[in-house]
Length: 490
Image (tube, helix red, strand yellow):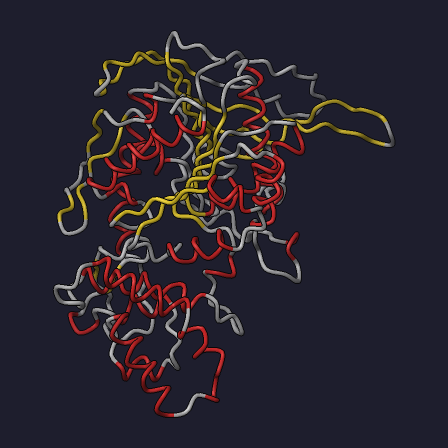
């Protein structure tokens, strides 16, 4: 990608930042043959138009954003799809989708119950999405190597709108500089990145006239009210129950019942009698309450005594701490298949998420090696894998109402009837439970004829479902088929 910064002279003491992109050539072996591709890694400078008293004062640098792009050599840009990918947090780099699922290299780390020891390794990703689309991984400001410029404002990026606009600007710049306006374009987001992707679809088309072919929402959250356990909000309790049941099943608390049978029972109850029981409050008679206590306990794997004391309302961090307390174990939030130990086995909430502890080290080591040794990009800044430096995160646009982008997604779909939405869910994901995603999508205000534009895929793993090898292979195939369908090639 050429450095087309169009810099204006600077008058202050700070040097004007410039792009520092590095380009390298590579190959990867896939089932369909060897792919030759070009990798471009580095930071691009974002600039803001400055107007003062009706006078244009030029373009002021605001941030340096790190990205990694992979483009297939010899492909026709007009026919070749491009996928812009990012993770969530807020505060997460794109390393998880990059080295876990989509990119041409992937981490070897093992899985729940069979983790590999450090040092960790990388291998070719034969199932890389590069086989069907070019890939651009974006690290939002303050994640990865992305930073505001010197003396730049953090609050301009650490919030819903600032994040949306800056990531959207990266997409616009890359598309323009690489002559890809006529390429099929898609977004792939994970976790908070799904909230970002859904809103970006509307932002890109309304601000720049950039209409997308598809959005992949991996471990989706579109309405924060479906996953936040706040006072007076009863919605999350039923929506988490099927995930609790899946995790209890994985740890042997449902005997030999098939997982699908357990989930179907939990889903029926979560969509019917459970919300009704919560709505009754103290109006439940003792016999009816006891029936609900027993059913929630049986599905969740918790004791009836615990469910009764929790007043039928099982908060998720409490669940992860309580489920295997008799074994002196906690279970993972990101992936309930993982277990760990807490220093206090009588604690109310676990000290750390054992699933995050299991995956953080392998991905950090792999990327820090890969970016220098293979991509040949060098930067002495710490690569921020998942940081709390973006906090406090501003949702001032939603003051007085819940944080939800279902309206933005519906608006984008109504305006662009060709927009395809793919939602990937892990049954053991305790951060963004699959039934909450189903609930949010069911409430999208779109006409019936657009409902077929939405597809779901489910995996017997967690938030980063690709750490489970069978799920990774299946998800790679599912995404490749979806990209081709969304772009009219399937």
